[in-house]
Length: 474
Ligand code: SAH
Image (tube, rainbow, N blue to C red):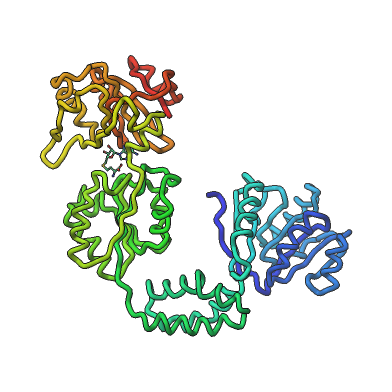
């Protein structure tokens, strides 16, 4: 981010603009929405500018700007559409201490003007740092359609009511009150006319005061494989409303970004609580926050019901008498097969699919190896990187075909996904050669649909020095 968005206090302050043509008009339409004192220097102003001056909306000087004209100005716009003239006026304004914007000259501007959605006092500013003004306008159009015009009046009336709302305890109770107002009670009352809004606020406040403290709730939420676009809408909503988010190590930072800004984010997978937090400690964290009335989001990678120790956490929550819900997510195996163009099940090949763990509390996990060794078997092996040699040995010992396809997908469902397509016989040497650092799922019995292998440049370079295993970058 090279431009930091802020909202500048301009009431009663000077904003000066030099220019009288189309560029000046476009900027003035925005600036005149503010309560600043606006001064324009234009030897030959457009008729609209003269009309605004006549109506007292701005002060117009029909001459070129000169040194001293921008004294005490907060902002200055050079909008003459003549680069030499703009550079001249910008230098004057800069010397006078104003923040300077030169229209259509990002490089020499100290600030840029965003696209604005105006529901005063709610103002949404959209910026692309000059990269894509078209995109900013498209977003603006989208928001204009989506945001009710009542938003402005509702926010204004709401602002006057803030002191009254302080009768509610700070935090969740007050937030719930405002959410109820903006989502439901406010728009409903506004439909009867603006005068109905204030009485509706009074009613709503007494309802909320009667309601007392709300109990906490625990949402066990699947974060999917890492791409925020693969979150469910329910997961998004839970993150939006969260007071506390307790997440695992594998949950991607882009997803944590989506949590409500005020939410407390706790990492249950990392230092601070020890290299990996003991399960009992995680259970205690969930219960502690739930008991305090918080909306707790227990965020797990993939699907919370797959190798997520969910049941232990549910039991703790039940014992504490707290309510909970489970929001499913896309598990690593689903993301992995989507990436290699295969199905988890296929008519005539496999009528069942197994989800296995490579290791459990005792070490490498034991499974029904004979069944897994049968032709056509498809299994997704989670936490299988370190157990690969063990699994390979057991399967071959139980008569599995050494040419059984095996595909290992690292960072499945993410932009940096990498795939190793190999066979059961070659799995171990190739996997250790590639040395995947990210989470990887081993898909037994599946090969990528594409016969061609595509290498990304970085992978090709990395592999060039080795006798390369077949690797495709998805
Ligand atoms: N609940 C998760 C699994 C947690 S166990 C889910 O449903 O996906 C952790 C293991 O999941 C990792 O060791 C790895 O085998 C697998 N895994 C998680 N995310 C992955 C990803 N994006 N790509 C590949 N494997 C992943």
